[in-house]
Length: 209
Image (cartoon, rainbow, N blue to C red; front, top):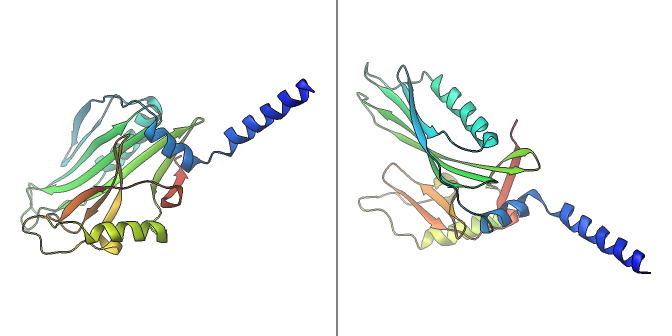
C-alpha cells in the first residue's frame, strides 16, 4: 500500500511539473529570480553603430549577437552624407532564464529628420530552448487592461497626441521581479511606461532558432 501511495505521489508530482506551461513558467521566473549585472560595448561598421550587452549567458548572447549582425548590415540611412543609423540594446532585466531589452533605433546627423523607433526583446530560456516572449495584442483582456490604464495616464509635457491601443502599444518590459511594464509610444515625445500585472492570456511566444 505504501509503495502504491509513493507511486501515485510521484506520478502527480511529475504530471504537475510537466503541465506547467511556458507562459506560466515565464511569469513564475520573473517573480522568483535574482537579477544579474551586465556590461555593454559599442561596435561601428561604416555608418551603423550598435551598443549591446556583451557578457550574457551564452544562450542569450548568441541570440543578441545574431540581431546585432543583422543591424550592422543595414543600409537604410537617412538623407545626408553624415547620416548615421544607430541601435541601442538597453538591458532592463537579466537573470539565468530571462533577458528583457528595450531596443532603440535612431537616425542621427540627418538633413531632414532625426527619428527614433522602439521595440522590446524578451527572451526566455527553458529546457535548452530559447523562446521569444511578448504581448498577445489580440487578447481582449490585455486590451481592456491597457485601455483602462491609458485613460488615467498624464501626457508628456508638450505632447498633443493621445495614446491609443491600436497604434501606441509597443511591448512588454521587465525592470525587476516586482515591476513588469507595458510601454507606449505615440510619438518621439509622447512615450510612457506603466506597471502591469501579467497573466498567461496576455502572452504569446515562439521558439527562437
